[in-house]
Image (cartoon, rainbow over all chains, first blue to last red; front, top):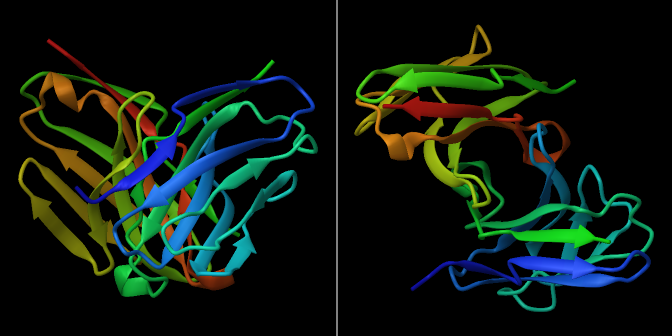
Length: 115
Length: 111
């Protein structure tokens, strides 16, 4: 089956620790995205990547880092510099970054809780 | 600037029809999406409008008026499983075709 997977579904970390969230897709999509979702707010874009070995900051990139070494994978690291990391993190992908084909499809999400 | 407004919550009865409105302001509109999101799960794609008018897909329809900056999602023959959040999202050409998401409308379907 084709799709987007994120692991783990729930993640607990102590304050001050870096943590990496996994996102893998086998849809052969070029573009991948990371969003953060907080209660009562819309999805906010953290980082996105249109092609392997390239990525761009979104609206709330501070305290986060990403890599895109393979087309299928776009891991997100939440660093200790992120002031309020507890949130629901969603990864998405789209076929390309051009307007006609960039409907985004989402993974199941990772709920990160920092204690 | 960019702004998307949709009601926070709505309640409707099983079997009825409900309309969820979305108004938006963008610099360079280039398409509007509706997603459904059950609690704790990923958003799933419902519909896409880029031209004015109504797009029908089974029990769900989506309407767009670009001149008014307005869209609605119409859900017919409501079922209990339709209880979810419905996210309106707009693609904006400004800043590289970003997709901006609204906060979502939580729909409660009661028996």
